[in-house]
Image 1 (cartoon, helix red, strand yellow):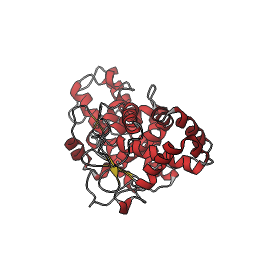
Image 2 (spheres, one colour):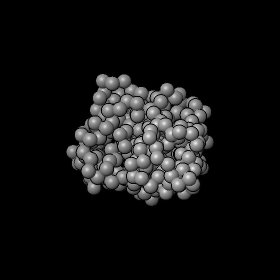
Image 3 (cartoon, rainbow, N blue to C red):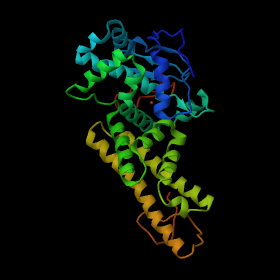
Image 4 (tube, rainbow, N blue to C red):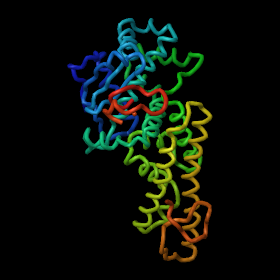
Length: 336
């Protein structure tokens, strides 16, 4: 496990960052982290507008006034500081920012920084990257606070946050709500599929692997594995379903911050995947009833065309020169 680099500009806060990195790996159910142990400050010209970044070389950059100073005060003053509800929310968001950025650095066991950089150079998947990581981080925050802070700080912080009149808005609200709605819709449709499992699959995988991982998760909760016994046909269907999911999230960049807009888009992406699966289940079940058929083209029916002839469905790293996408980006020189 990567350990905090003592050469970091940001203080270690008694092992906080190591515990947080381990907790992010646990919550993502990830195999590895590409965090190199180093944490430095966001450049001064961005520190009031940008909370954090994961950089191309595996560092974290954190805002001195928005992230580090609230935590410094929390550790210096102790529980008494949390009597101020506004300050308690600042502390919660500071921890959430670091957890979010560490989420960008989760990776398969055999991946390198170069793999992650190359895989993130896909502008159309920025909304999914940010949305899934933020949605999962928001959901996991109570457990994160409980496990990374000392008990004498975790308990009063959780109490103060719970007592706040309004919950803190997520970063990238349109994208975050869309991905959360997508996960909830799939959970409601497919037996045994939990929303948290959908969020984890989307958060721990980067752009080139995310849609396929989500497709595989959905298929595993359906009759399709028993109906699509031919490995090539099963792989082709999974690829088609991944295309539906990937295209849905690629179009997420134009979603505004409004909660209703995010919910509608998440419902639409989920509906496309559900229709693809349910139509194909019915089609291939009919094939099985007739003893199977030989298909010349494609491997699944077009959505809504059960029984017809099947046809094929047709948080960037390290590039501050490129414009930020979406809402409430965390900052320059990496993924926010």
